[in-house]
Image (cartoon, rainbow, N blue to C red):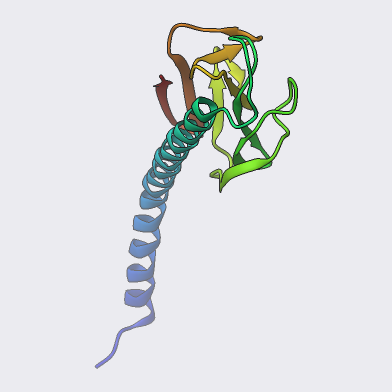
Length: 148
């Protein structure tokens, strides 16, 4: 007593159809997990950056000068001491960014966040007195948040 070739082909076909149905759900789950991971990493980096800015180890003065920054380049999220108006100073903390996850603010790619010595986010060297809204996306998965 064994299985005939036709019975075996029917079982394999059923398994293939179930696998085809499950793949999109699995991909959406993976994207959601990567978005949540990116959100957690961004919040950690922002907390480290704000703490560094408030400690102000480079003795930055004035509201319009950056005391710390977050940089997102080459799938690496880094907390840095600023080098003038660029976020290219010494790396204080870093973590890998989930591949393919896009970070935007006001529909533009967000690659650096500058914070002054009072813990305020700077946009074009001007402190903003509101929260920084951002969006994360990958494929069909999206999430929004605020840094404050």
